[in-house]
Amino acid sequence: VSQDYGVAAMALGKGAYAIHQSGRWYTDENIDRMLMERHLNKKARRSSHKNHIRGPKKRTEEDDERFAQS
Image 1 (cartoon, rainbow, N blue to C red):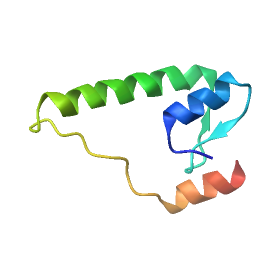
Image 2: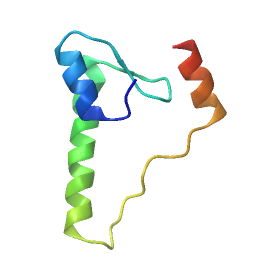
Image 3: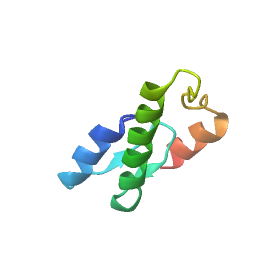
């Protein structure tokens, strides 16, 4: 269980399973997109404070249910 995309990517690379704390599974199909979004957000944050991007949304009951089912 990890919220960190980089750690999840390393786990997938070693053949392990990785799951986000909200219950979403990290897969080979979606990890590249997540890492690219993280990179672009970091670039935007560095370029200007005007374009500040908000962090992740608060955990919901739906996230808790999805995590329990996963």
